[in-house]
Structure formats: C-alpha cells, structure tokens
Image (cartoon, rainbow, N blue to C red):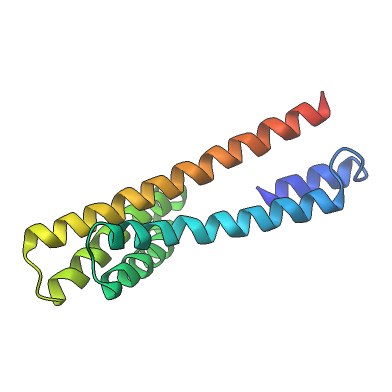
Length: 137
C-alpha cells in the first residue's frame, strides 16, 4: 500500500499527499504490523498461556505468514498468521505439560488476538484509503 501511496504522491508532485504524510503512514504501517503479531501473544497470555507459549504464538504467526504467504500470496498470509499463531501457542502449552483443554484455550486466545490484529490493520487501511480518495476529490 505504501508503494501505491508513494507513486500516487509522485504523480501529483507531492501536492495531494506530501512527504511528511507518507512518513506518517509508514510509521503507522510499521506500528500496525508489529501490533498485528504482538496481539496474538498478548491474547494468548491473557488466556492463561505461559510466556514461552505467547512468544511461540508470535513466532508461529510470523513463520506461518512467511511460509503460506509465499505459497498462496494474500490468502496464504492470512491463513498462515492464524494457523501459525494457534499452533505456536498450542505447542508451547503442550510442551509445558498443560492439559489439552488448557492448551486449546491458550491457542484460541492467540487466534483471537491474531484476528483482532488483522481487523485493526484492515480497518486502518480502509481509513487511509478513504482519506486518500477524499484528498483527490
């Protein structure tokens, strides 16, 4: 999205979208990317997971995004985030000796955190898109 915004600003001679606005959007996108992955770990921890399991939920989401995203592009990245977060938290809890029900509860928390992060990121993208269209009209 940032490349699209930069190209749009370039063609408009940075009148409609200025360079400081591009840097603000870049900072916001970096923050949202970090938040998207961190929410899975925070939600897993809130659901009773160990610190290690919360960390594995974040790592699982990141690895799932990379692996499935490289295979199936957008759909794979979303599924990879969700599946990876779930499996990372579940595996961490299983290794910690928790019962399968406790591991599922922590993994479900990680999954809900991943979904919340994805919804937050998507909503922000829509807001930025609407703002860009309003700038032109």
